[in-house]
Image (cartoon, rainbow, N blue to C red; front, side, top):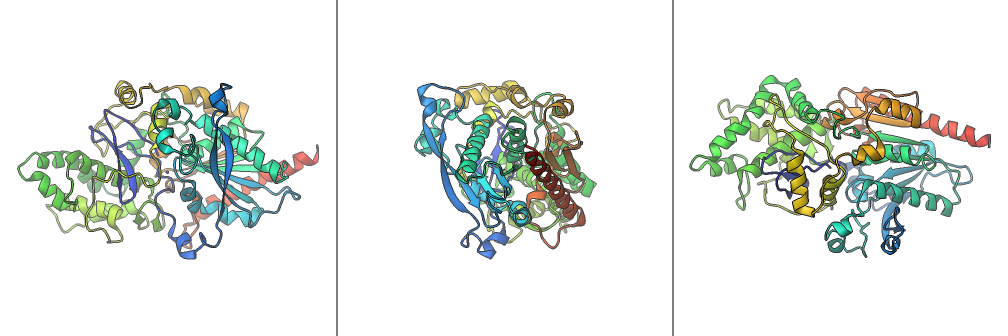
Length: 507
């Protein structure tokens, strides 16, 4: 849940297991916060990992699906996870639910996609979670990540189109091996995985009868939506809770810059924000704060979570309450710290925050390549933004990518390959059986499909919803609107499967 944008230079940080990107401009464009960072506490406590939540398997996958030169025929081992606990079996043509893996370890996604596990008994479904090539343990070139990530010659095989072809090849082979050729397949995904799910249904309708595409910004590309839309939603999330909260955060960037330039200013900032002694730099601090505001907006869930970090219900509201009710009336830095502490240290366990941790514990680094090749998503901040004003520059973006990988981005490839322009008219003519879910408190919803296209291409929009909240495990505290959304999704998927059975009965 992971977009990376390059300005002039970039560096990869891991802070409390949250990965993000900082730039010389201190402008953060986040990764998708897919369920990568922490497994849900519910799963850990239940011991379901030890009791067989899934079985790990590997599939011998072709390196290149689209060329016929000798190297194309090289293979690698692609990991997938499977749960057949509730599967009705091939003889009954019971459905197969497939998660189209995101940009990281597939086990983290699996452990956090509770919707599929909870609905498997109802549908008698087989569950399959496929890892995306170049991530986790699905590394080409002998599983050697250093070789696979060495340069553009090897990384050139990392793309969304190759990943979709992987999924199609694996699913077809799996069904054949299970003698389940006639079992219908429904694909699921959130964030980038949600984009892949929708694109898979469009590109491989003979493999999947439908797709649940959650929080998938398939329109967040050049000339499709405003580059300001992401930051505008983050801004509105905070502004809707408190005008003062919005103003305090908006004014903080200038304040931090001014303090950093004074004698002893960096040390004051370090102490105020409890930054560890090993490293302190103003751009890194600003990136640390921006990450807290952005990711809290994305994960503004209606119930307590342990998704990225332990958070209370409606954490944006809690942050603004911390700013508005702070006893430090004149201490604006203190207000900011108390708000950021909700994101970074709600459990109260952190003693200090390390801005110099460059580790990548969940293997997300491949997204840098994807962002520099096909996933070109323009983003900017206007004068009303809660962040500093920033204008998108393709020239700067391209120069950064060329410097890092010796290649140039292809900003129009995604829309050429999958479409996007006039999407309502195009999908009306060419596709069907897709659910697009978006929560309007999620900044990525600005690049999502928010209107029904046909009776079978449905947009489910939740005013209070956050990033792929529908795919999360259900809880007793879930509000009625969230329960209704999941019920609606189940009914739609059920109708697809029913129609499929009716259709094959006529053959």
